[in-house]
Length: 193
Image (cartoon, rainbow, N blue to C red):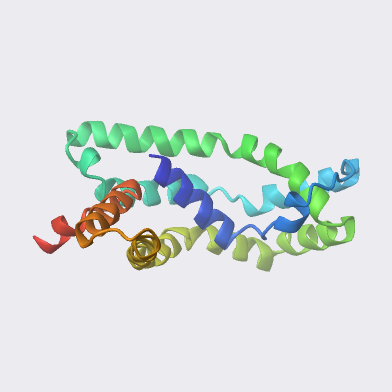
């Protein structure tokens, strides 16, 4: 379940939300509270990019994750459908709270001029189209990102074992654990298909 939320947040951040500069967050500098106008603009912008398609996309992404989750597949179909519907509904219900939590981040990261430009763009037909398509592309973008995760895990296990000097068996066990932690089928299960 945690992987699904992480994937959703990652896909959302990668496809619709501009990155927040890490240096500003980690430098220890205190930033001034955003102006009321910046907060209002940030809220407008976030409301514009979080389209009404969000729940359907969440449902589609969760459905894909559930199909790949052995524990979910072991449940009766009725239970899987109920959990999928409930998770998608509750995630979509959290959008207003997510926006509220993100407002100060955007209001302090972007200038009023930048926020005004973002609102002006996303409030146009072209901007609304781009926001909608950014949400629509999330499931496919998630699949694209997840397609490289096995390589990442394999390289990570190899490097860790190179550094710590583990045996081939320990490396295999580490990789299996990493795959399981990422919600992926063990490599041995994939080979037996």
